[in-house]
Image 1 (tube, rainbow, N blue to C red):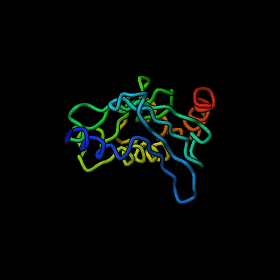
Image 2: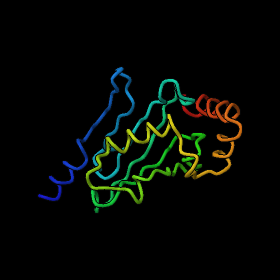
Image 3: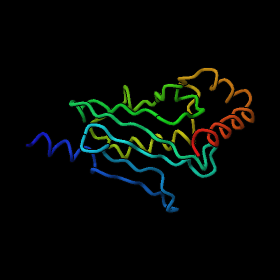
Length: 153
């Protein structure tokens, strides 16, 4: 009983959403059906970003070691981003070496929202997209908007 109570506390809540100061809903998340270890999240493309207007779906999988190990978070929706590959794997330090049990799923999703606004080409998962971002930003942004329109709307 204690484990499950602790597990629920660490998950934040069984259904979460986050709004910024401007009341823009950034994300929502909750369990898929009755399985508390498998969640689905929706992230809206941040206003002013190349992903604006997009609706991105993510899968979140919690291991039995959570919160001592990070959740596995992957994009189900295709996205043109140097820190997210074609399998939806996300290169984000808090999902790897910088994980802390003090981090909540809300903080993880907020960090992913932030990554959509400001990518990290210094630590890319897709080198060609990072290079394009650094050397031909206009073309990068055009393709990212095109992918958002094609796959996320």
